[in-house]
Length: 91
Image 1 (cartoon, one colour):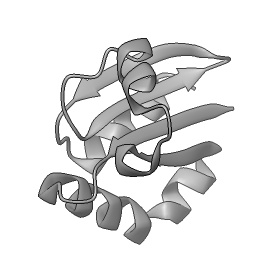
Image 2: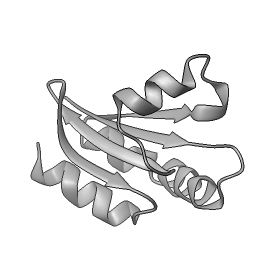
Image 3: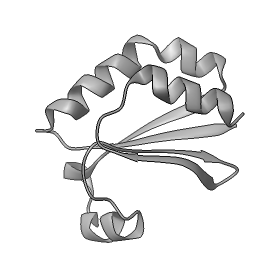
């Protein structure tokens, strides 16, 4: 099983766009057996530790994990088709 994590912020326009695009195509992620997790930095109690641990430089920050190992990382907006392609490549 793959996991897609998208780190967002409330006032980040590209984050909102990406979240909506993924929501519109969530069935495709389900068919690929990829869990999708959105993490809003604004809601994190230990935000600074999370940012340092994951080496975040911008939002959205995106990564795909397979068996707990990051197999894809991207800082900033990316197209949903690119995410789906990376998920397929890492299955």
